[in-house]
Length: 175
Ligand SMILES: [Zn+2]
Image (cartoon, rainbow, N blue to C red; front, side, top):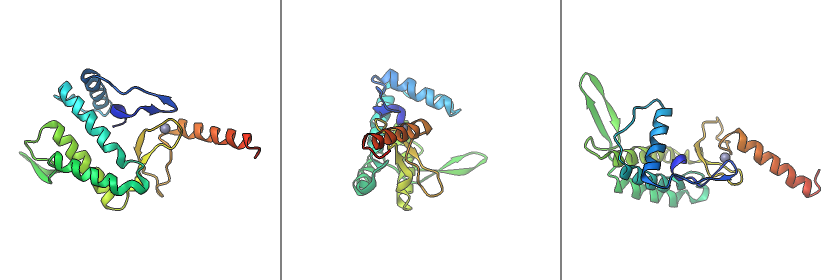
């Protein structure tokens, strides 16, 4: 999600991949990082995944706007035909997925990721869908801290935000 649609990161403006080829390369790189085999996605699929990633972003850091974000997420789940489905594999116990076995890769990804986010929201944990609060950074993350208090995407943004708060206090004569 971050690599496909975010336009600011760590205080800098970043250009998300612009063409289907660039998007596909970004997705393939992420899959490799996660130790997942390369998929059979096409550049058109990659374009559609980038659109879906952008549509999923509003649920992160939604705050008071969570009802609107939830309504948009509901629409996305309908568009991509999300449905609980037990996928069978011979010799193995069925696995619960949220798309039909014959769904396209794009629908399957949208339905599975969308459902995962819906479940987080539906159990009252939307506060864990975080967006970085440092200036010029719109990276999103899942907050796994015990009291859901994470505000920044990583330490570099946390340090940057602390430094700029310190400078602001000093300018205001507070230090
Ligand atoms: Zn950040």
